[in-house]
Image (cartoon, rainbow, N blue to C red; front, side, top):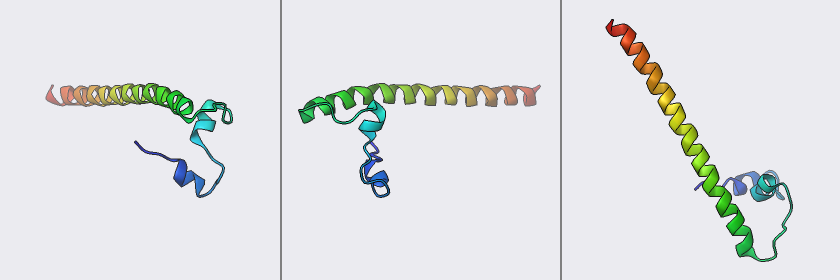
Length: 73
């Protein structure tokens, strides 16, 4: 999966995508706790992106079918 942190850190060295998404600084002591929270969010984000892509594909398909139906008549 794409990790934008290193690219953004070229311009903003203190940037962390986790801090921006969670809206806070480091709150966990154990690194595995921090990774589990982000991994759980990652599943929901991927599901949301998948649904959005599917809706866009359905919309494009609907528009194309409507145009082709008009051309056939």
